[in-house]
Length: 193
View 1 (cartoon, rainbow, N blue to C red):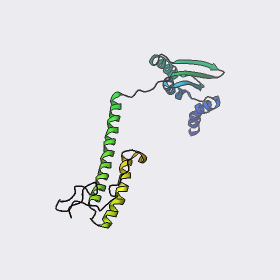
View 2: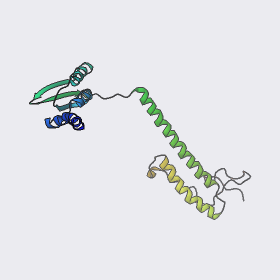
View 3: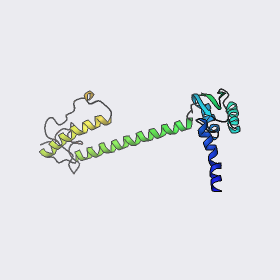
């Protein structure tokens, strides 16, 4: 009994494999409509042209009038040639608008992060002490900050004007009482001696 059930199940498979067809009758009907929409010519070699496949060919011709489908008999096989229309999906304007809005939001987020990093560096620079070590640290930090600022603004470094506000004299910063220059080392005059 089990042997008969196995033989019954394997006979169609053995017939399909012996035919030399690349596509079986159950798969062909599922490939016809996508091949009608595809770009170029699709070739399917099948042992039998089932009623499902014939119905799929008829439906494809109704849905895609420009498609060209030919059926040729080659000995014991059928060759189905489908010249597709090369359909391309057009993006919905609403989908495009959402994508543009997402890109804009990402760009604003990136700019905010860059601004936060810049503000943090400036805060660190303004907190340096009014000593020779602080002045040296400020010179080094400003050189780094100028480079990072130019990089963030996507300007080539070679096109930037020479920037060295600390080339002469001491660096002054606002003291705790709020007196003194507003920005340390950025062209503010020294306090009276």
